[in-house]
Length: 355
Image 1: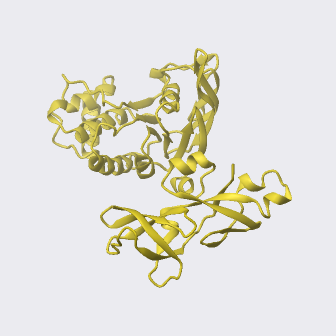
Image 2 (image 1 turned 90 degrees about the vertical axis):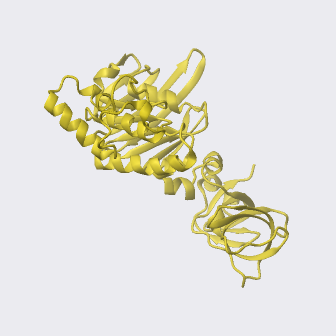
Image 3 (image 1 turned 60 degrees about the vertical axis):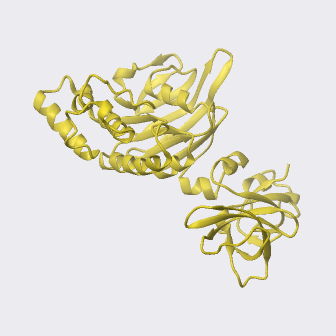
């Protein structure tokens, strides 16, 4: 395992800039994720880290060793980086055991057999060594691909959309299993995905990408509760923006009441007085910031609802006509058009200057 560091990395295809000034540090033994929509540059970043592509500028370091610079790159096969592809890329003519041991061809038979058995036990496929890939389910094939990547004890594992070919229920379960496997092997790993649920389930650190740049590199908790800008706020989780007015450097007033917390950077960055008082902002409220309370005198109309098993996600129309979201336990089954009591339960004030 090793620390991964990207320092102002850029890459372009001709005149088209794909990634620009990409910088982040993934600590040794941590799991990171590049999260973003299609075309944001996340897979290109992965290919640059793996050594499949050169970089235009900047530097990539793995375990303190520089592996890519603008005019030089260490060949992919010398980086000790394991790769798990979107389509698994298992060899169909080899057994599961032979696939897992493929990267150990230079090791002795006993060492190879011991490591293969160890990894098949780790990924829950003990007893499947003589099976062929086509005899396995999609989830099992994914675990074989991970075991094969782990076999040579790489410094870093890279995974490109590893669960995109699986159904939703299997994807969620397998993402937790993969995290557990990586942690038990104490492996540094970087995953690329467009699915925030995968990112949150797997990663210790997540970088939200947009148009080739990382908008924010943070823990999943901080991305959700303290997004750095509007793009991150919109891409990660659900929420609604309500108009608000800054009262002072630690209070913002919205239709539902006064929120206490620090004024966001976007509001006071210029240092002018009007950014602290009487500044009009958009305040982000997550569904868990609004709690259903039958005893509350503050009412909102149920405009829409989505049943999620244990909860309803209500779209609420406020007296002013603004809309907000609220997660409510599903035994509170209110009709569309009904007015319900609500109260605020906001721990983090997230606001952006009105445009």
